[in-house]
Image (cartoon, rainbow, N blue to C red):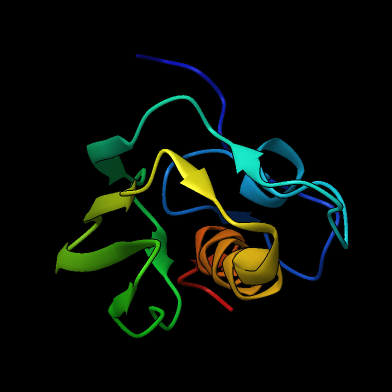
Length: 130
């Protein structure tokens, strides 16, 4: 796809590991507290492998550390492979429960916030001349 996934507005342009900035917290754990159990419907898993290729004269900045998270609610793995001007981001995350008891909601929300944060880790793109 030739979509423009380059983010600007900071000191240098950047990309996100899955090409956009998802908000899993807003989608799955919007409220800070719950009076009733959270029914998600069904467990789910997301897998993607995205290759980012830079034009001549550009390079990727420092890459984020790989991610491995596990909790009773799900898991996440993010791995980066750099090959010259090409970067592959392999991302997997899952929510493995179909419902969350209200007593566990705070811990679930914290897990989802952490996953969102990891997917929002910017990867800088730098001009080789700078």
